[in-house]
Amino acid sequence: MISTGLKRLDDLLGGGIKNGIITDIFGASSTGKTQLVLQIAVNCLSQGGTILYQDTTGNFRPERLLDMLKPKELDTALLDKITVGRITNAQEQFNAISKIGQSDFSLVIIDNITDLFSFEYSKEDQILEKNKQFTKYMKQLATVSFEKKIPIVVVNMIRKINDIEQENLDSVMSLFTHIKIKLSKKSTNYVGEVFPHSGENQFYYKIEKNGLMSST
Image 1 (cartoon, rainbow, N blue to C red):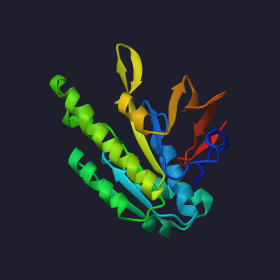
Image 2 (cartoon, helix red, strand yellow):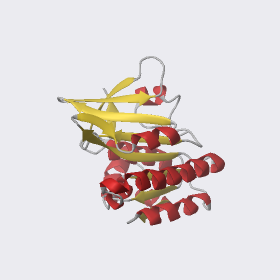
Image 3 (cartoon, rainbow, N blue to C red):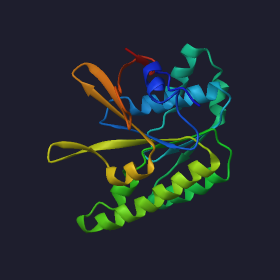
Image 4 (cartoon, rainbow, N blue to C red):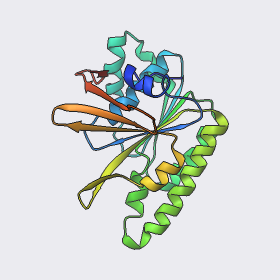
């Protein structure tokens, strides 16, 4: 199990990120989604783990991880235990699943999981095909996660439809993700919610200058 670095969130998750399931972190821009997955990555590295980081947007920045390693006094050589794959189209994203299944990674991160599918199937008459292909992809991903007992953490975005915020490809994401963490910013406060969960499920957080997130 891998700690998120946020005690309240770990409590809601039953201790942290679990093996063999897909954890979905989603929210609007500037709510700390990538900060949280990088923080999870740092905690995985501190436990001696190895990571596959699939970057579909070209926004992966190793210097952000370096900034997070320093406060924890961790060796920067730990970054050698991260394999970064730059994914540029949906077919490459499909092909990358086999790399997960053939390796012994301690953690897989996919940031962003729906972006390429939305880009390649952007027309109105492609909605059915987009959902079909993404469903196929998520089914294969969930199977690998379960069979290999690998924790997979994915990042997703929120879109506004008729002034209502909705997770991108939510109907498919909800079928194959086991834990959903929604991050949002309200005024000057950051708040997260965990689904599904019975009882109180909110936690509050802030983003530090070094990129680390802390509970408030």
